[in-house]
Length: 381
Image (cartoon, rainbow, N blue to C red):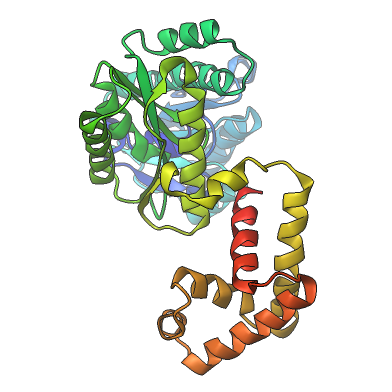
């Protein structure tokens, strides 16, 4: 994780901000905040650091294109992450300056002059500090699930993460879909962390929640997890949530964490727009997961799927997608045709053609079963 220009747009001080330039480059990383309200000097080049995000009223540049170029060159040359202008003297930028910033991947924001410098600096630096803490915690999670720790050190690591964890643990892993991104995770993290026996952090590409309880199973456990899932979907509907099995002892936290990660990724690979995927309900996919990393799984996947994909690419056909939807719709030709907006006879023709291709490359009795297994293997691979 890292704090970017995009991230700070969700801060209170930037609620009314506008983007003057560099809208496509908001993922520049911010490492610290600096102020630039005087003409550029050689000293600026010496004390500036890559990742600096600058605040300025733009007074010395407001009446001169040359001064503006000189000022921007200094920021760009020192690898600044972006610029925030207060609107006391400047409300917009000339087209040539906007084009220049865009060419140099340099975002420029505009905020009201009524917002204190101190508020912006405090909010951004708090975000940077929280990100640093999150990185340390994410590293602890990675060490926990890597298999490198014995039970004693697993428990010590978990106590460092949250000393109030109870004896048994489940996990949820949230991936954001649609227009949602990691910035949507902040309220979810805040909600989960309000409970003393639970913990949440941004982890890899999503959000990991750890939920603990004192008994290995029971209705109260299911209700507790359902409560968190309902809260997550309420706070951010555009999510795929992977849910682990219940009842793992605390020192075995790596198992539910990996289960939740895997279930969420299966949901994303299935193009789920918004859903909850329970690891315990993945069926045969759980068994296939144990073969992950074996060359035989990858070979089987290529053996079944590559001929269909090659045929589609060569002929502009849709055999692969038709087979996938056909299985999703429980082999119902009518519903598959409706889903794909084609005639039912078209679906029947495509399925027969896919059957021919699959059976040419695999002697299995059931070509649909072979395709289904290969598809599941592909998700894991």
